[in-house]
Image 1: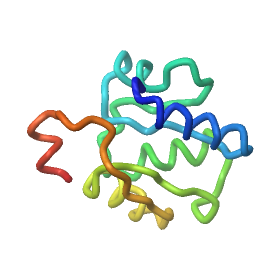
Image 2: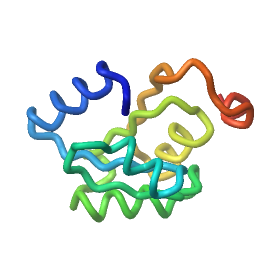
Image 3: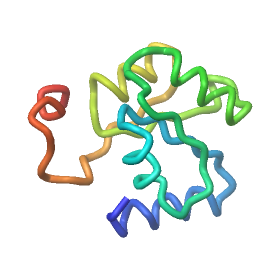
Image 4: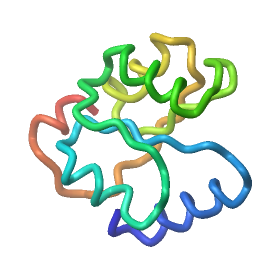
Length: 107
């Protein structure tokens, strides 16, 4: 993640017993970098806001939609994607201040 705050948050969430699955539009290499040392499942090339990757995450975690929250920094990809399946969604600030111009358009 290269962001101490995000790494600490992920550790606290896992230590508290929550299931975590990373759903990313990135390529496998970038997604693995994001997951880093944490033993969490991840779905890459998700093409969010499609429903399929969120369904895959539910299946991997063996959870129902009413048991899951999507945490993301993009309204179009993350929040809309989660809402399309009835998932609770939390919009957070982006980790990186510099980003691809296409990503900025989705925020």
